[in-house]
Amino acid sequence: MTAKMAADSMLTWLQEFEGYCGLVILTSAETGSARFVTLWENLDALERSERGRAAVRESMIATAGAELESVERYEVVLDERVDSGPPRT
Image (cartoon, rainbow, N blue to C red; front, side, top):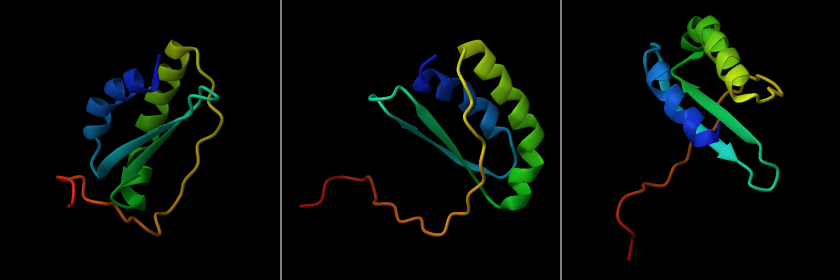
């Protein structure tokens, strides 16, 4: 299962959780590994969704024959995004 296929499978499910704010997937063509980062409104939303996310994560890993390295929590201390609108001239 590719990271894109996994994302497609995850999106509908993730969007059902209250407090879900987004998904970022980072992949490495060199190593074939991927990092999935889910974004949550606050710590409470993250904790409320934890059991459901774990169950689906384990199911997807088993289906894909993948290996889970770790599950970690991080706090966003900076979120500086560039508008992806039309190119600037």
